[in-house]
Image 1: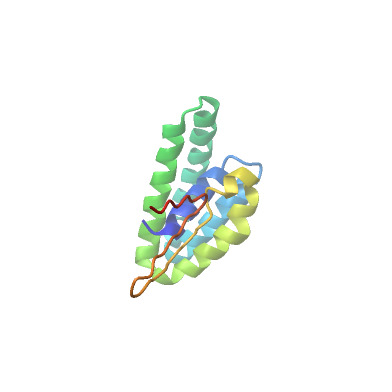
Image 2: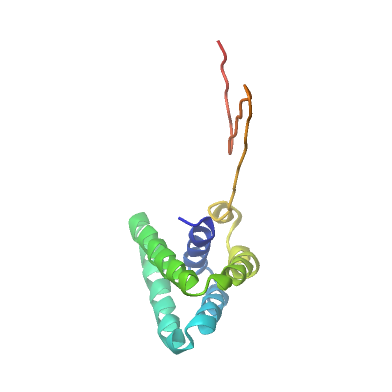
Length: 138
């Protein structure tokens, strides 16, 4: 899964439950307008339905329903980027400038994209961790 798509879908769906949901919707609509202007009305309506479903899922503490909405938008965003790979930069901008700022501090950690890479040569060893790490040598 593309980390950008995963982060963007999570942020979009999560932002749809905030007071700034219309801003979140407008960011998504702008993406579709660039690739499929004929689908803008349908995307606007679908985002309204997502908000309704999301609020109901949160009211019922239904995490699987919320995860399902995120998965739906992952597929939609992945297809959109497949049709126009140049849109990735704009998606990153919308994620960073529109959707992420709508999230609370705890929710922002769910959309952070962390990429780690390392290489070792010879007898070198690499230790990487996203958080705590304990190394025991014998």
